[in-house]
Amino acid sequence: MDIDVFGAVHAQSWQRLEELTQRRRLSGAEADELVRLYQLVSAQLSQVRSTAPDPVLTSRLSQLLAAARSTIAGAHEPAWRDAARFVLVAVPAALYRLRWWVVAVTAGFLLVAVATGLWAATHPEVLASLGTQNELKEYAEEAFEAYYSNYPAPAFAAQVWTNNAWIALQCVGLGITGIWPVMVLVQNAVAVGQAGAVMGTHGYLAEFFGLIAPHGLLELTAIFVAGAAGLRLFWTMVDPGPRPRGEALAAEGRAMIGVGIGLVGVLLVSGIIEGFVPRMAIPGAAKVLIGATALAAFLAYVIVLGRRAVAAGETGDVAEEHRADEVPVAGQRSSGPTRFRWPGSGPRSGGRGRGLQLASGFERQVSVS
Image (cartoon, rainbow, N blue to C red; front, side, top):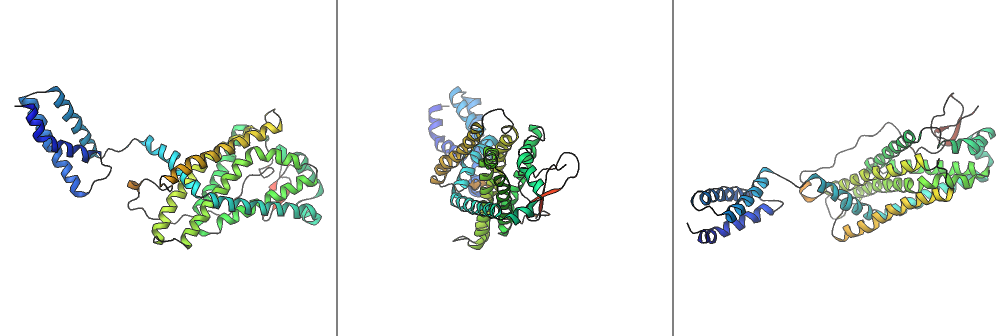
């Protein structure tokens, strides 16, 4: 058998098999054609081996059949590639598309927190409603700072991380209600404003910002993003645009769930900062610099990778081959509203003590002798 003639006669079939093998998705007819060509080329390889063994042609056909066999058997890209796409493309794209929602949520949170703080600081009766004079004094002088060192750093970091990650996932998952993210954000803005008022009126405003800033810059930004993601889901339900409502919700839901998962990692970083940095024996400015650096890294991740991904047509949704037969499902409500663990909100060590009221309907436990 003349190998050159044999190759020229069957080259078109081999080329077609290679083309079908390299496609990510096949129609029903193309899948049937792939199987037929696989069987045909298998027979041709057997013929070459038995009548005119040529090492070059044998190697080429063997590699072609191995690739086709993987396609027929349903082989897919390695999991690490999916993970890399999620971290480097999908999440940044979804975050970048949320940027103006995050700006709006941040502005609203700061407005409520500052207004609450000024109101409480300038109205003695409001401060009095938060606790007795001795309680407020002890909170400002001892409890606020002690919050960061009452527990071992690893356990404290893990506790803060899991608490805040759960809040972020709730804001995203229950955002379709349009109520839950707003409720969580407002409650915590009020709590921050009240805590700042207590610290400020006792002359500890610098310590307040010095202790909160290292972890709060990244932590609060992550929660703002979670609230924005939840509210975007709600708005998609209200105004789905040109797409059918179900399709729009499914697409945005998948993208925002990706945001929620990504925020778990972001809050892990802020939890580590909160657990370890405040108790370090370094200047306060250095501690704030650590928090600012973490925030800058997150913003660079969103702006650089996110802008690039969006420019390439990414929305944060899963890859196209994974979208078939996906429908939005209703999330389960939790038993009640949740808020961040701000200084003084953790359980006191030893004894029951008396509560320092720092947010409507919630009690922050402080060590009161």
